[in-house]
Amino acid sequence: MKKRTATAATLLAALGFVLCAALILAPSCSKKGSGKKVIGVSLLKENDDFYKTLKKGLQETGEKMGYEMVILSADTDEDKQDKNMDAILLKNPSAVVLCPVNSRGVHTIIKKATAQNVPVFTADIAAERGEVVAHIASDNYMGGQLAAERMAKLIGKGGLVTIIYQPGTESVAARVKGFVDKGGELGLTFIEDTDGNVMQYDGNDDQQKSEEKAKTAIAGNPALKGIFAANDNMATGAEAAILGSGRGDIVLIGYDASPLAQKKIDAGGVWKADVMQNPYDIGKITVETIDKHIKGEKVNAVIGVAVGLYDGKK
Image (tube, rainbow, N blue to C red):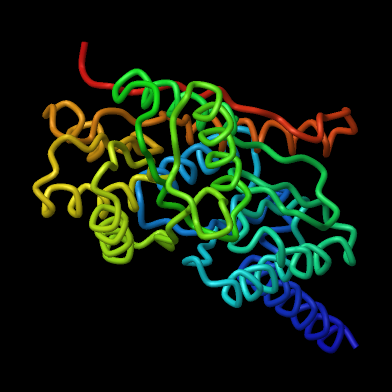
């Protein structure tokens, strides 16, 4: 009996060792043991300076505050953003952050999270529909106004301008509206379509396409004096079109003030100014807002992050 009892005890000890080892090795058990809450993020993209910096703000702030950050990129693909959400929800997140690929259609992706009682926040780009706790972004309408003010100062009242934009994103729409509203107040004139509406050339956040659209605008409008591009990727294409046309009198203003844009503005060419955002602060404030919400504190539905204007080294 004593021998059998000893054998049973040995077996129980061995089994306990195996169970402990399994718990240590199992990712889910290890994560649970860490006590960290997960914040899942689906970025619009991460191949440009703006989103790289936004990601850094999210990552560093989240880690400092004790969260596990799961950050994926949709690479401007709506279907991929949908799959991002599926992957994030497998992590049992405490909150989800979206930078929507499609502001209008993202509500179906948001619904996946809210169906599991996971709160959703948007950063940089807002959702037109869907249950979102808070939206944290630059004041893009104000940014468009700043661009119009500088354009009017550079080309004067009555100067003819056009816009290179990207459809489907709320942030770009706000920039364009701010530019058109303030530009109209200041006496800028706009290329119009056959119905008398302000013409907007679809650059689709692509340098080559933006260059082609800018070439079309320049060739069809000899009096053109200015182009407003709603982000630096499209501004780069517009710059190539201006330089290729030999029209060095056309003023270009972009949006984002990436390092490349700042370098071009500093050089004193056709690219004269850029609206400057603070993507790191957008990421930082997004995580801070989530933390407040998780702790039961009230947060504002819309949180604006200040913008400025970069027009060269002083």
